[in-house]
Image 1 (cartoon, rainbow, N blue to C red):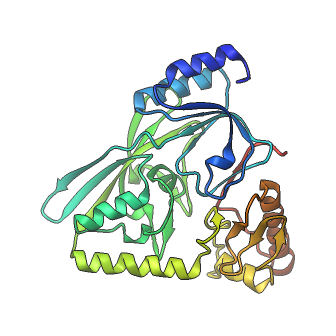
Image 2: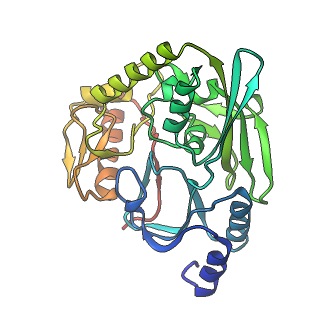
Length: 309
């Protein structure tokens, strides 16, 4: 498929920025695992992205958009297709919305931490719950990221989507199907940006709330190790996945260099040179035990892609 040198040259000619072939995805995921991807590209403009996905689609080459590589596990056999890293779509703009609100528009590659920092500097309230979430705007919208009782859908006004033809659509929140930890969009559709409607607030209060959330994350989450964030969605019923895993006695379980965190049961950490298969094996153990002993079918929040090693 993308091993063909002619196809590779065509793809290279479309990319003004960086492109790498036969690239280890362990270099591009927050948990630090993953086999070889046929190609990794960094489009720098939406027009360039449009040409790329049009070419890949018609050449029947699989592709996947990736933000910061958080909440992503690539299997040891790698990804037989093209990984599109969205960091180049990093524009940010602000627009007044009356006297009390401001709209922040950000490209998919902008990190949530940048938006949180900008909001704090401009005394804009609404994004505090995103403090410490390591993902990008595109990834956060795609998974409807949330914490501390709020979700991305609570602050999103519009989402820019690129469909497989390369056409860009601006969709209002009410026209989109946001779900718990998911935005339901059709296959091949890529989020290229979003607008967030924030409210003017008091800088000291916003700053205090951000620091409070960052402190909680530091105390609860194993940030000293590479990880992919929360592994499982919280099931219906009010008991968090991390508590279930703790009650099952699985915290601290280790396979190879992958371990279920003793600090937070819903995190699996890479102690150094872990394999994706080790992490997936731990995920399977948790799912099996939760189902057998508690009758709970845990669903992964992380996305697992690629081929087995």
